[in-house]
Image (cartoon, rainbow, N blue to C red; front, side, top):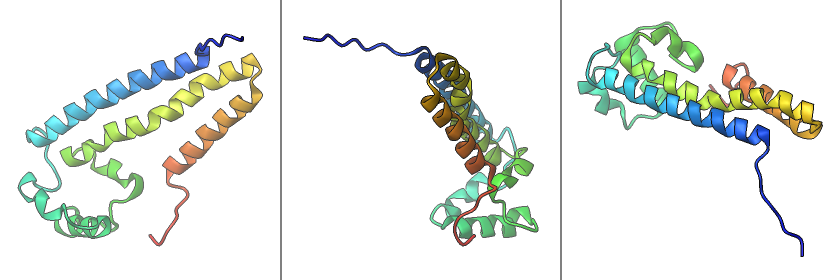
Amino acid sequence: MTQHTTQATEEQVQYAAILEKGMYFGLALMVITFALYVLGIMPSIVPLSEISIYWSMPVHDYLVAINTNFIHGEHLPTGWSWLKLIGYGDFLNFVPVTILSGVTILCYMVITPGLFRRGDKAMAIMAVAEVLILTLAASGLLSVGAH
């Protein structure tokens, strides 16, 4: 009878450690930025007293409404254009979401050299592909759909 032992590889431990730190950092930042917004410490684009009016709207209609009523921009705030509005509490909340979304890319970047060193070329190539695909998806260079 063969006895199986399960032990995490060095790369798995690295990945988990970075993911854990990134998750806690993103979560803490989310609490902080939300507090800045809700407590009115930072100004917001949409006044808190009016935000419930927009909750039931589809995303496109919401973007049109806040652009028309508050931002008065030439274009709707889509993609990475929220960065121009980072000085407002309601858009500052996007920073921790971005961090939480991007921590996986960082994890794969960190473990890739170890996978190559260990000779696990298939996993290393998949990790590189994962970094490229996630980065390209996050960049906004590719768009799908009618918008």
